[in-house]
Structures are given as C-alpha cells and as structure tokens.
Amino acid sequence: MDALDRKILTELQLDGRLTVTELAARVKLSVSPCHRRLRDLEREGAIRGYRAVVDPAAVGLNFEALVFVTLHWEDADTVSAFEEGVAAVPHVLQAQRLFGDPDYLLRVATTDLAAFQQLYDRQLARLPGVQRLNSTLVMKHVVDDRPLPE
Image 1 (tube, rainbow, N blue to C red):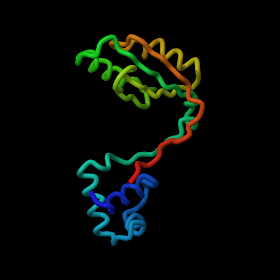
Image 2: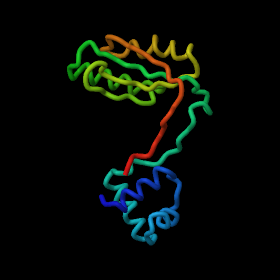
Image 3: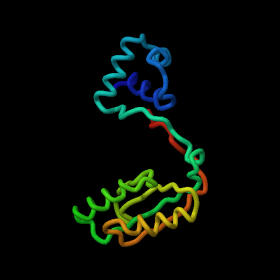
Image 4: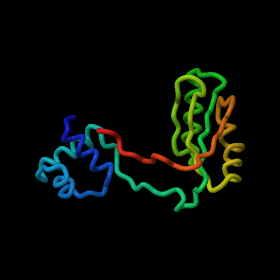
C-alpha cells in the first residue's frame, strides 16, 4: 500500500458516497487508475464495506454505557461461548477483548437508564462465563468515528 492508496482510504472515510470521478479528482488521478486502485483495496480487504453512520439519538438510543466484563475463567470454551453470546445482543455496539483485567469492554446503547438496567440484568449478566460487570455512563463523545490516521 502506497501513499496514494492511503489518500484514497482517507477520502472514503470522510465521505463514503463519493463517486469514482469525485474520488479521482480529490486524489489527483484519472478515473481508470483510481477505479483500479479502489477495486484492489476492496479485494485485498483494506476496504471492508460501505455503510451509513446513523446518529443513535435520531433512532431513540439516547443512553450509552461502557461495560467492563470479567470472566470466571478464560479457557477457550468459556471465551468462545461468551463471544458468541455477546455477538447476539443487538444493543452491544462494540465488544473488545482486552489484556489484563477486565477481560472485555462493551459499548452499549439503549433508550434510557431503565432499558439499560433491563439489558444488564436480563442479558449481559447472564452471558456465559460472566463473573463481574462494571459499568460507567457516557457523558458525551469527544472524539467519535474519526478516520484512521494515514
């Protein structure tokens, strides 16, 4: 991947709806080479897809929490069962496995505190292998959905 590929990626992260013609103009390439590079980036997996970025508040998800999860055990079966379980919870927007304690960080969005409490009690606390959950509430997003650095 060279500097031109990185510039293409940067432009698409800022506006994924660019036409190939617009993209080519922004990166100072003619359309055909830009299109070829774009297809190569898609084929190689550097571009995983295109999607709309939706404002959670616009769809009623006004409450966000970060949930730290510690498992009882970290054997392969427990980890796999937990990860499959958490992947099936629609209100978990992100789940990351961490080194050290806690074992996981979940980003969760719900309509309000009452909905979060129900999610916490009825789904998150019952995920396979969970020993402890610790939550903190998001006050505001300071840096959100930033493009990857070049």
